[in-house]
Image (cartoon, rainbow, N blue to C red; front, side):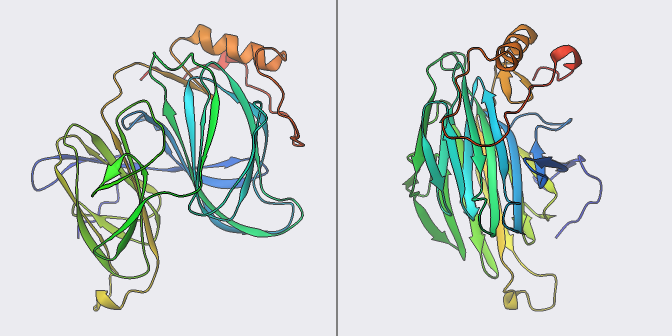
Length: 321
């Protein structure tokens, strides 16, 4: 098992395929909830159409100190929330109210504009672990009408000791019902002990793996939470393993959880700024002005949190991808 300490290093596997280790960075969302942000980063802004990846938790919180994100807007993207532990209430400007619980996905398509809020129950303590991703919408869909969908059940299968949930796309005969607009793959792989499998991949896709819990070996690389392993394109298979570093790997009872994402390289240049995905600085500036001045984006019915303020675009420095 190979170990490398240098984050963001460009490596080469034994087959000569490129591998990139990208260090996540810590950030806060809502009322001080710490997360690890894997995308975007300085060295890689997208994996397929996936353009944002946060991992929150696992964390226990006291009553009134869970996730608390007040009304805020989005354009040009789909928000994808995968709930692993706990529950969060989604409310949006279309009037939707939906609790999301473990094993479920919320998918919100912003299109030309939507606002929403996300909150844990304020009157009780709890535990939270979730992954939130954004999917950049292609030009043909990014100006469309906003919509929201809740997926209470997703297909799953067992392979080599891993329980694999198919979040997006298809794997080993199981296909996710989640509606997307680009060729994508998203898998959650979890095990409570030693596990090992080899997954078939589409060589036209680029892929990346983020360890959420435990330790894993992916394509011969040892990774832990805090590193996104980018795998490039051209792979037809991917070996994955969850093992301990002790003498008897088979005695491992620690939980391991991985998130595998992939997709065909997104050819459209995009701009990410705050909660917006667009193509030009002018689009970002217009959305920022509209939100801050109370235009274009309707209110979120029933939301009690403080309305977020979009940062002024005079500081806009995010480069195109």
